[in-house]
Length: 341
Image 1: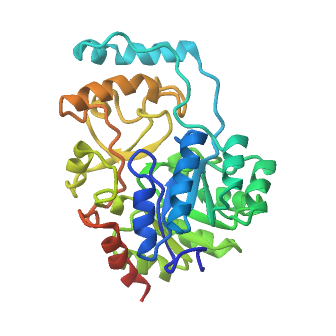
Image 2: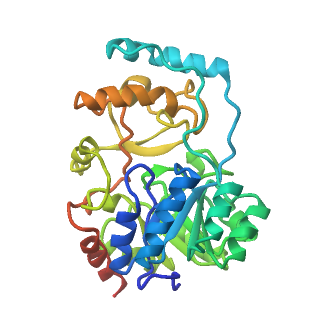
């Protein structure tokens, strides 16, 4: 698979909150396809980031979420606020805010309009695909469309719905699960097994993602038939990443366990264990659905981080951090490239 705009079949995964165009450009300059996470960007900010990429003359993958935003449930939000109330009192904060808006927006007409002015080489989606009319607008401008699947059923749906390639997101992957049909993690597979299943059934290229930390891991996924690989955790300690100091400190603990949790956003995502996950449990029935849970946690996170504590910080990470090193992104890409030899 020749990824548009990249010398290597390697994608630097989009990671909202811990990167901007700087990491995308650094990875791209070394031969990978850099990615810009756009799910938390306003149209104005998205335009500014795309202008920076355009000025650098570097092709990029622009990533969006395609989730369905549910209406806020006041009763559920109240129960969530009550569960967090002891932490607010401990940190001297006023009670949790009332029902707040979503922190992450699905791809919509405004984002499509911004994209049309820049014609990115690759556009990717998490949580399925946008409505057919919106997807048609993206493809009409020549974008190569990639989307995440956590099961074979999701991958077949994506292929039938217009994806040009499918990301096989194994259970080892850090950050949010991209599931949209099969939301039970018990139905989802490790990366190697998922890649093999998708390669056997799909006509479009398969991109392996999750638990890949070095050239050997890259080589193993390519041997299973993957056309490309996507890595995120391995870039979290890079010079160009915006990963905060508390998060960086925990990433250096290579043997620390990770869990799937819905506490930070309402959607299942993999990260390192901290206080709030230990005390509320990694999966809470009280958390509002994605992405509505995060608003009530934001003040707690801000106050705790100011005190030097990661108690309420989402510490996203895949299961492997042994390849996560404090180096320029270009060095990481060069190390991984040996897996394609």
